Length: 328
Image (cartoon, rainbow, N blue to C red; front, side, top):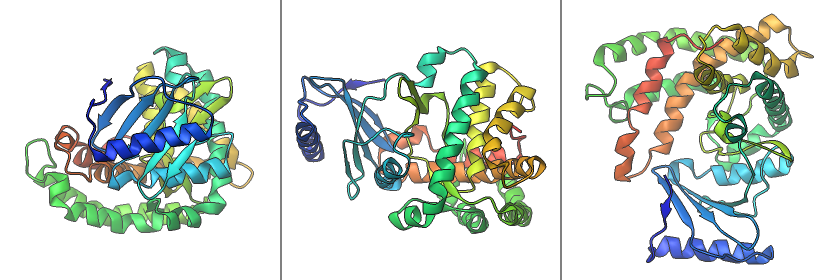
C-alpha cells in the first residue's frame, strides 16, 4: 500500500529528492506534488508526479544495490526490452525511470491468458541471448554470480547460515530438513555439473518474472524490477514464471499449458540444441533456481530494517521447495 512520504524527510530523502528533481530538470520536467512512497526492506520506491507522466524513483538496500548498474547495462544492451533510465547512481543504488504504462497484470485483469505469455517469453529469451556475451561485465559490475559451477558452494554457505535459515526457530527450517539438505548436497552438485555440461551460455536471470514485472503498453513488452536478478543459467527464470501462471490459472504443475509455454520460451535455443536436451536443462535449471531464490531473499533482507521480520521465512521456505515438484 502506498503512503505519503514524510513531510520532514531524513537526510538521505532530502538528498534523493534533490537528485530526482535535478535529473528531471535536465530532461525538461518538474515535479508537481508530493511523492508517494512504497517502503519495503529491500527498497524504497517513490511515485513522483510531474508536469508530464509520473516518474519512478527506486533506492535499493545494500543487498540489492546492484540493480542500478544492471539497469544501466541492460538499457545499453537491450534498449527496446527495458525501460530507459532517466538517471542512475550506481554507488548509492538509486534509479529514476519513466512510467512504463500498464503492466501485463493490468492488461490481463486477473484472467489467465496463455497467448500473452506465448509472446512475452520469446521476447524475454531474446533479451537473454543478447545479454549472454556480456555476463563477465555484469559480474564485474556487481551482479551476483550464480552460474551452475558456483551453486554447490553457494548452497553450502546457505546451509551454514543458521541465522538466515532460522534453524530450529518457529517458522524456520526444521532441523530434520536441514539434515536432509546436507545429505542432498552431492546430488545437487551432480545436477549443477550436468547443467553446466549441457553448455547453454549463462545470461541475466530475472528470478521474479511474473505478470506484475512486465510492461505491456504500446511500446511492446518491457521487463523491469531486476532486484532479484543474477548471472545464471537462463532457464531458471521458468521457476517463478510457470508457477505464477499456474497459480493464476488454477492448474497443476504438469499441465500441458505450462509445457507449451516452456517450449515457446525454449524455442530461441533450438538452433543450437535439440528439444529433449533443452527440456532436460529447463528442469535442472528450475531445481537450481530454487536455491537461487533463497539466495536472492537473503540478499534482499540484508538490512537492519525491523520490517524484514515479515519476510524472513522466505529464505528457508525456498530451500524447502527443493523437494517439491517444480513446474515442468
